[in-house]
Length: 310
Length: 238
Image 1 (tube, rainbow over the protein chains, first blue to last red):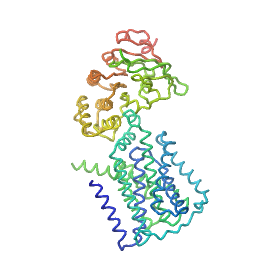
Image 2 (cartoon, rainbow over the protein chains, first blue to last red; image 1 turned 180 degrees about the vertical axis):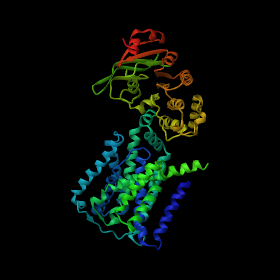
Image 3 (cartoon, chains in turn orange, brown; image 1 turned 60 degrees about the vertical axis):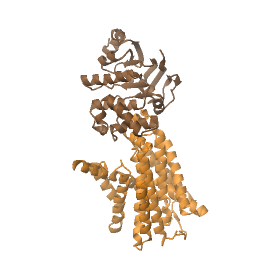
Image 4 (tube, chains in turn blue, cyan; image 1 turned 45 degrees about the horizontal axis):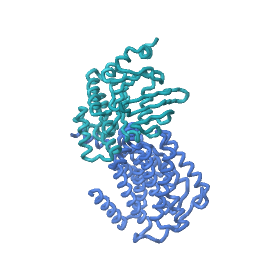
């Protein structure tokens, strides 16, 4: 109940912010930061809770984004329908990828997810309806839902999606599913022998995780007014989506939120002040530092600090 | 005597290597069965076939009269087969209590206050009550062994398979674990014990099966097994 109130107040705060007379760039950058909150949270459901490292993040984002494009281009679907459609299709991709790969463990699963990115990228590159390799320019519809600009509206939409994603991750963590996924991460064989239907819960996690990544990708074409496969299928998304939970801490739903807010904000600052190319370097350096010095992330550091101050 | 588990002509191969070749085992309800054999004789493979860790074997396994050969491990656990592991496999990110709540949640379908109280009762029986809220990766070897048995008990088994639960323990600790297993058997739970500590197996088992090179070489009471020349040959050589 308390959490629901906080979640509602957070959405209200974002609504208030998007209606305020402040610099437009805040919403432009804020959209990206909130998108990474969704992606990191989604990745953590399978990667953090169950320990299955998914490198195929761009494939799920792309399915969300290209589903939105197809829906918009074919039936002029409104944004909400684009997001729902993108989420459903990316969820189905998650289910299919899960069915094909979740019997694999460790590095084999991760490699299989990378393959999905390349396969889908090749398909999109040769699909002329969505622009093929050269991409597709999109004209934003005039509907602004009472916001001053389309970017502000997208910022608010992404804020709602971020709150919803975090709420889903929190619910999973506290549920049977979360307990089962943690058991899978610690020892899959022991989990199975403790009655946990390991394949089933991994499939559920993979589907939910994929759907949320698709949801994060769906508003992207409208945000950029453009879509092209090289940027959409960029593997940097995978690095960021796994780096953020690792830096924040994978054991709790708040970890990816902290990691995403911290890292994506730094990335935005670096983009504006230094160069766009340095983004990946920032993630890489922080990732190495955390893996070596604080493998349990910021949450682990806080826990240690609390224990030592007792 | 009523049969709880029946293993019929089970053959398990790993590539070209035959780990089990036509093994037949019958276990009676409430029995304490010892499973012995030298390293590589197929004991753990047999246990993995029974518990469902392996399902790609030939032959059939019946539990409580029902064919469970194609069932996955979690489905067999729900039917009443639980096990501990040769190398302890705690859910190390969880406390001891949370470890027990996993089977309560997935086998019993509930993990509320009632189940926590039940888990506490099991832990008391194992002498682990004071460790209930300790992270399981902080436990000593003997505590880990006991926690594995406690977690198996949380699945409310009819058949408990103890896979070398006493390996690496001191004499006193072996006795502690033995007492626990005797206690569980008194509750009506059938127990299969795999063990290399012969004194423990002899003391615990009503009947012993000896495996060698994937085959049962003899079966009988502890007294007959000790004197059996095949067993002596398997352990000591010709």
